[in-house]
Every structure is written in C-alpha cells, then in structure tokens.
Image (cartoon, rainbow, N blue to C red; front, side, top):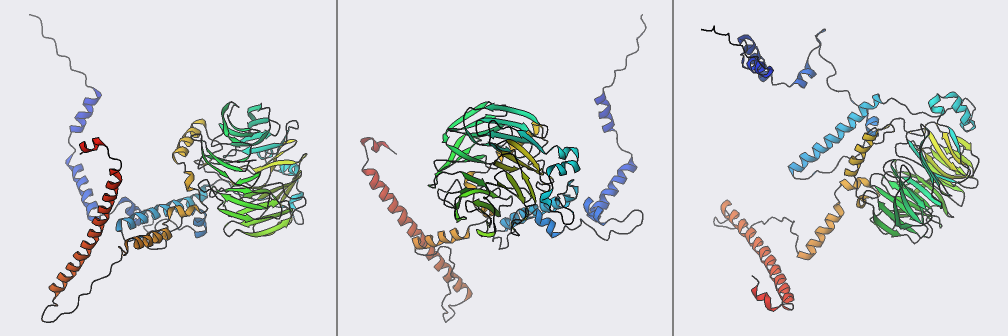
Length: 575
C-alpha cells in the first residue's frame, strides 16, 4: 500500500487576501472611537471650513483676530469688472430672484479671485524716463538696445526689402508671428522672435492688404482682383470671387468674421468658419480706402472722402453713426482697446481724438503734412506716421499732443503701422522693407494663457480653436453697446402692451378691484360680499371667453370661405 501524499496548499491570490482583510472585524476600541467622533460632529454641527475659521492657534492658544479672507480694494476690483449689477427690482418670481442672485455671486467671486491673483503676475508695465532736462524723443533705438538685455535688444531689427515694396504688415493675435505683403506681389510670414521663415512667395500681381485669421495657420490676402486664402506654407486654399477689388481688411476674432471694404464702395463680411458671405452692404460713399475696427464691440469704422466717419454693423444696412470729423478726406483712423477713444487724421493736417461715448472731439492738434497712418497700442500709446517719420504720443485723450514720446525716421515712406500685442514693439512697413522699433510701455506686461498664448504648443492651439468655435458669437449680436444684450428692453415691452390694449379694447393686465355696494337688512354680511365678488369675476371671465370664441369662429369662417374656392371633387373623402 502506497503512503499518502501530503496535500499541497493552494497559493492565495492577491485579491483573495484583500477580501479576507475586508471581512476581518475591527477591534472594539476603534469602533467605539469612530462612533464617539461621529456623535461629537453631530452635536457641534460644524463643517471642516467652519472649524478651520474658528479654531485657535496650537502654539499660543489665541483666536484669529481677522477671520476670513482679506478684503480687496475697490480700484483693483474695478479693473476686472465686466458686468453691471442690476439696481432695479429683480422681479416678482422667487425662483428668478434666486437665479439672478446666484449669477451675481458667481460674477463677484470671479472678480475677487482675479483681483487677488494680481500679486502673482510676474511682469510690471513701465515707460521710458529721461534725465532732468532731457526729452525722451531724442533717445535713439541704438541707445535703448545698448542698455537693455540681449533678448529685448534683439527686438529692434531691420529687413531690407527694397525690390517689392512698400509693405503692409500684420501681427498675429498672440504677437508671435508677423505677416509681410509687398505691393508688388511679395508675401512672407515668419516667427519674428526666432526669425524663422514660415513661407515666402510672389503672387505676381498687386497685393493691397493682408490679415491673419483666427490662428497662425491661415491668412487672407486682398489681391488686385479677388480675395485669396492661404495656409502657413503658402498653399492657396480658397479664391473668393464674390470679394473683388478689396482694399482693406479687418478680422473679428470672437465672431470669426473677415470684414472687407472695396473700391466699389461695398462693405462685406465673410464667415471663415463656414466659408460663406454673411452680409454685403453698399455704402454709397465712393472708394473705401480707410478702415479700422473697434475691439470693444466689433463695430467697423469707415473713413470717407468728404471728411465723415461711419460706423457699421453686419445686421444693419444703414450706418449706425455718421460723424463729421475733418474738413477734407479722412486719411487714417484707429480705435483704442477700451473702445472709448478714436483718433483720426485728414487732409486738413489735423490729428483729432474723439470720445466714442459722446461722439465729440476731446483734443486736436496740427501735424505738418498730416498723418498717413495711425495705430493705438494696448496701453494707450498712439503712433502716427508722416512721410518717413514715426512719432509716438502718450495720453492723447487727456492733453493736446505737443511733443512726441518717441520718434524714429526710416529710409522710405511709411505704408503700414501696427503695435505688436504683449510686446513693447512697433512694426513699421515702408518702401524699403520692415523696421521693428522698441517702444517701452506699449504692450500689456502679462498675457492670459487661455486667451492669447505666445508660447502655445500645437496641441494647445488645436484645443483653443475648438473652444473658440464653440463659443463663436453670432453676427446679429454686434451692437454699439454690447452690455445691452443681457438687459430687458423695457421700452419695447411697453410698446407691445399699448398695442395689445388698442387691439383688444381693454387692458388684460389691469387689476381693478370690484367694491360691492353696501346693502341693508343683513345683506352686506361677509359671506354675501364674497359671493357677489365671485359672481362679478365669473361674469368678466365669461365675456372674455365669448370674445375669444367669436374671434375663432370668424377666423374659421374666413378660412372655410377661402378653401371653398379651391375645393376639388376628392375633398369630400377628407375626414
């Protein structure tokens, strides 16, 4: 008989060990401690945040004399204010009141958080200051480049392109990429920080203007005959033949609209997200060669040969505002970032600053030979070009510009000006090529990485593009005052109510109480008065119902009479 073999113990799996540990009961002392802790919390009824707010210091035992978050100064909060608080009654519906209060609390919380994080912003804005008795416009670019660091000094450079000029220029929204277009057909794009060339080509015809679209992967070129769309490598994507003889262009980033004005006096809008024409307006003002946009409300400003400036929206076929700005033709225009001030120059050799809230001039001064190009920076500096000289002015809306803040002369007449976003740089396109000028205090010191990120990767750009398309604003919402979109139009509501009263012959919203006449011999008791009130209320309702039934009956009769004239033999089989 063979000896019995000992049974092998089965190896335990890792999940079997965990199950046994979970089934293992806790010691009685631990369970009692947990129950005691729960009872204490139920007795006190305090949350973790309340305990942290009211707890004593472990070392000294003293209470915090300043509990809660520190207050934020009002001027710092005003910097981030984006909406007006409703001052009138919120309405009679309690759920609506709660919803509005909740929305206002969210806005206030976002404002306070943004104001508190001001401390974390790494950069500070500044200006160029001279010594005693020294004028800042005498300081040359070479003097600034010798003093600043190597990175800042590399921002001043010249591109000598005297063969295909003069040049129009355009910076991308994040300030990273530069687009150059010569009048004789030369188009080039480059990353001007690293000086890396993106694409370069010659279209062999006149180029009037160029504009980056929503990203640096596409740009539009207004050529002699039609409008063309190219990618970042210079490959032609589209030829839009509906847009002919285009002279100037502006891109509205939040609406994905490319606004163009032509030599035939047409203002047209192209939706680049779907590739369709949104609106086309015949301005009846001759050749449209002066154009700019208001960054605050996306209104297009057009300058005309008779000295007027008109403001346009794609949803309206007539100008929203028409202003007489100069005694001669308007040569150049620019609107600042806040949308409150507009600078214009004309053939009368005057530079005038207008307040767009009142449409009245604030300051005006004469410039020798007049200003051919104007451009506002992100921090309110105004650049004006006269011939081959660029002058930068400071605080033009406060005092009359007398002496410039900075000055530079280039080798050829200037054809295009633009401040680079988030950089203290002014780009100058002229007949001899391109010049990058350092202007201290021109750009915003800090950027929002979720809005415009100069250092974004390919993946970040793709994600931003998807979100921007989802948040695209419809062209019908472009108005002079964008804050009115979230408000109730009380005037039109009153007009609708008046029209309804005239149509019905009575006010359905009017509530006039029925006061029953006092009767004697106990007939004016409380119960009798209530019965009489209910009887009158029912009679009023009956009259309204009768009126509505009569109106319906008339409508049916009119429709039946109209149908009888078009009756056929087969209509008798209809149910």
